[in-house]
Length: 99
Image (cartoon, rainbow, N blue to C red; front, side, top):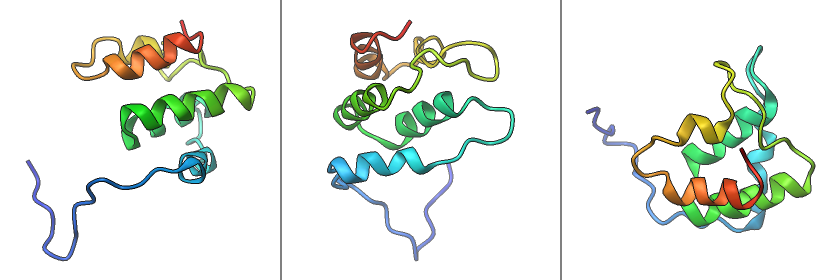
């Protein structure tokens, strides 16, 4: 496991207000990746469960596709369904209509 450099601080308890959550919509997708899948992945990797659930609400309100395919053709829900600590993320996606 890599160690943090001494000049880097680990951020714990970062506040995610609505504006911070909405800032995740600014991440451009790499070439060849569906932009909606990319946004879901960035939010999943960067947010706690409760913040991710709020992000998913904003995501749907903005007309994004919860079932966008990833590079392997799977939806984001299909991609994380076997992740050990993803239960709350999966619940948020399913509640919003992801398949």
